[in-house]
Amino acid sequence: MLLRSINLEDHGELETVLRINLENVEVLAPMDEEKLRRKAAIAERFDVIVADGQVAGFVVVYGPGSTYWSPNFAWFKERYDDFVYLDRIALDPQFRRRGLASAAYEELESLARPHGRMTLEAVDDNHGSLAFHGQRGYVEVGRFTCDGHDNVMMVKEL
Image (cartoon, rainbow, N blue to C red; front, side):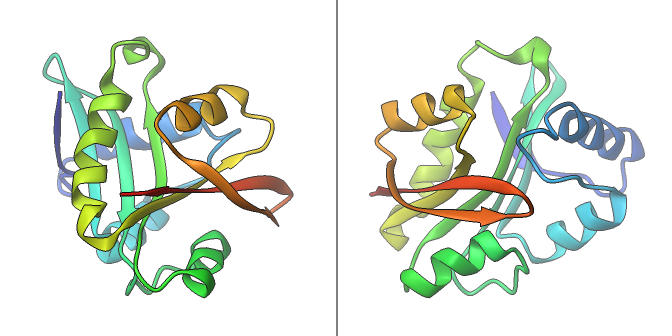
């Protein structure tokens, strides 16, 4: 598994990321190419997850000083001075259950360690996500409704 910056000049790569986002849109927010480019411009990391020489997924992470417009990010910013916010992680279904998400989290949590914590939210009825994050040491610190989704706000102290 390799995490590397998204190649904004590679239209095939952009299409793959957008397809993966669409396949996971029930637990992620919609994203078109314009939104992808705006996110990439301000993200601390907008990386693709590469496995077997293919784009298997992607991650988007913001630091505490980001100008990110998300109400979920703002919720954490109101409560914590320093943190790294995992905006989204998604995998192509054919690459699930291979440890790729866990490997990506290891690297992202290492990035977040100097900031003291990693933050994220999960939709409250996404039991798989809640279980995965609980096993990784994330704890619920609140709930927040945004865009019609009831979100469990989670933090892992590092």
